[in-house]
Length: 322
Picture: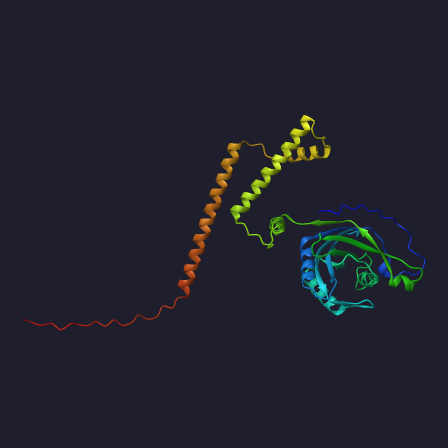
């Protein structure tokens, strides 16, 4: 899922007046956002106080060697109080949490900050200058500002920005900045696809719940999805051959590359290999259950307390003679 907006980046000379380190670069970026960070931001927004219009937090991730590619992989919320006159950010909490995150994930670095509001104001410029500062910020790389709209009843809107210096003197530059939009892309791994599809399945339900499918159900749904995609591709190719739809060179090359990777085997061999694989899986499952039972039995026998046998008292009945 990529941002469909178009952007133009114009390189300009830096101003002649001394510019703070936070504004020393205006390099364009391509931002990749992982779903884990988005869910953390949405969870932070849901847990905000009633009187708060937005919440902010720190973005963590990795950056390419030249600094033009940024991946946002993680984040954490930072407390702040905002009014019409001033804004207060808990910097000590930010520094403590940042140090803990960097210890747990040494490969990640500070890349910017987020806000759950599309509004950009003077306070946004002040916070942006802090995150892009030298020493505790992202300098010499620009800080990424991610805005996400969490208005109930509306679609979630995500935008990413970097800042550029604005002002005629150092004092004005330190308090102002121009937010320049940069393209972004939302990326998820194949292991996360099934979970995201399961979550998306509840958007049309009134109670926003969806049952968790079993392994067999998930396999059945995956097969149905593959068959549906094959039907769509077959219908498209048929319409192109008949002249009902315009041909696409890019789609044709993609289909040729995909078909060249498919193994050339007949249906009988595929069915035989599939059945053999199922039998192997069942055998492994049976052996695993047997080993689990054996281990459990051995553990119980090892912990059982075998005490001395109770004395057996034999009662001898008196014999009578007639």
